[in-house]
Amino acid sequence: MNYTYILRCGDSSLYTGWTNDLEKRVRAHSEGRGGKYTRSRLPVGLVYYEEFETKEEAMRREWEIKQLTRAQKERLIHSERRSDATDTYS
Image 1 (spheres, rainbow, N blue to C red):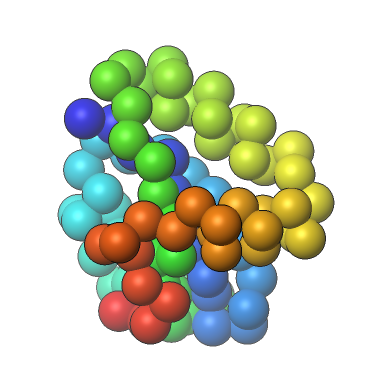
Image 2 (image 1 turned 90 degrees about the vertical axis):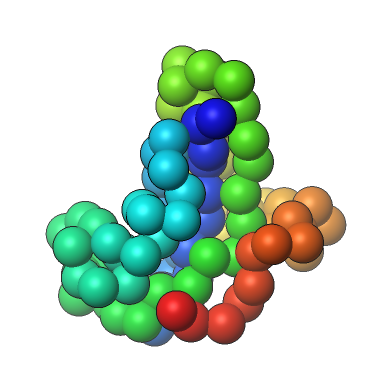
């Protein structure tokens, strides 16, 4: 599976990415190895994700989400929240 995900950072900003191993990628972000943006905004917590069959679909959805305003992203997080995603920091 491939995933598009949203993290809430320690400064309350939102980070959107995609991966083929959600657990490993969130752990990497939490440990400061996930990306330049999240590294300086620890801690981070998974607040939303979607599953896709192909990486192209996940990448396309990542781009779509990145085009949304913060308010639209917050609505997405709260209206479509996945049961596995939590708003707690890892």
